[in-house]
Image (cartoon, rainbow, N blue to C red):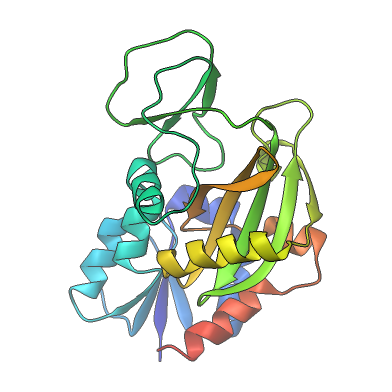
Length: 239
């Protein structure tokens, strides 16, 4: 069965390593977000849930699904769902100072600010209470609902700990309580291949966000896990 791997032109340039891995392991061609041709399955790496919906409406299996992509790329919606299901989050629609302001669809820490001056809330942003341990978080990768690995990210120069922004990263072993929380979030997300980020507050994990088009750079840099290879095997068994 042949598939399509969907990237924007900009992201395709940044992800040449991943693209070559997919090409070597799957019968797949790389297309841009405008593609609407034939495919037996599609891997949507655009963060645009509308693309997933377009293929699903034609009966084509999409990795990740429209529903996962819709939730993961609307941070306020995602926080509301997690909060409703008893997953700890940092308070949103927060009116105190300081506060974290982030676009509802931001990724990689882009556009996220820590502000000390109160401002009127604007549409399209999440306003959130900061955790008490800035510059430190946990990224967990999951395939088909199963935890693959977890890596602790820390920055001594930025309240954002993202690896792509210069943060340090080391493999992390979760305790039983942390594993229980992480598994609950992964089950709620119901994604094919996702990253889930957690903050640390009062010594415990607090949900932060789901990454729909989660990257693999940290996994290859810090572990011996071939995570894209594992994902391709998962895809083969689910088409």
